[in-house]
Length: 322
Image (cartoon, rainbow, N blue to C red; front, side, top):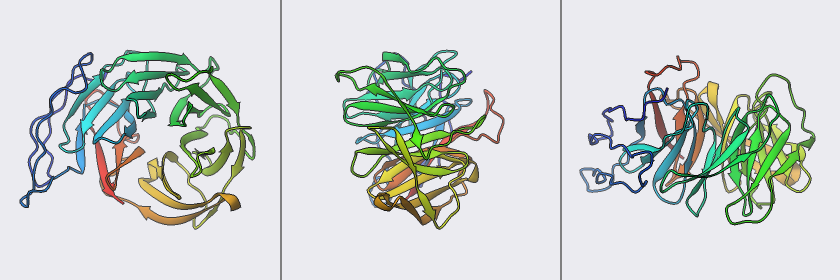
């Protein structure tokens, strides 16, 4: 079980952070947070590590225009919010036994779209109050694993790691029904492994890029037809263990979880190519799964899949500068 209170730790960031303040599950996300710590020169000392509750089992992370990270729990679907300026945070949404929060994305209107893993569902959670606005049943197939999500202007698109489809849910206030988009073209579904995982939009916004964790391939997917074109990788054989994706312009960042690294790729979609640009590693990586960008940094959660997944297992998030 995930504890709904915070484990108090001290972060060594040049300034000792104050003890963490929990947000109540039903209370507003705007609960008071302590002042930003300062450096000796008066500038903000944003931490590059921050704690999560023991036993939280983090998987996804999302950040909007404001300096707050939202992270989901595989243990019970809880959502935790951290102020990136201080490293302090608390439980925004308490979740419930039998649910999960895998990938998640924050929309500009303050809603969190949350992938529900093996439940086959997706939730829409108010990022201000923690209240569940809507729950969508995406599939009743068994097995299924609704893994990650990306937002387009009209829909939230979810990957299913166990089935060769994408699920498109109309965004709040938009007309339409849930759409199931079969993956065709170059896509080959493999049995008994995680297939489609992380997902981002293409630079022109007309398609998606999906990583297939096993064997470690990148695909350009048409949102009109579902046809998937496998990208030729230049500079590395694969992106095996590819998990979360972040795109910044024409550069795609792939979190390769159990390899404890992020690879950055220059996209050339007209020629169906991706060229290795750089590789980022950090000794603090402990099976990071997903990443989100803010203020020149990538923020990641350490899922620690190779460590015991117990109620007293410690978890954290880390940041690396791009």
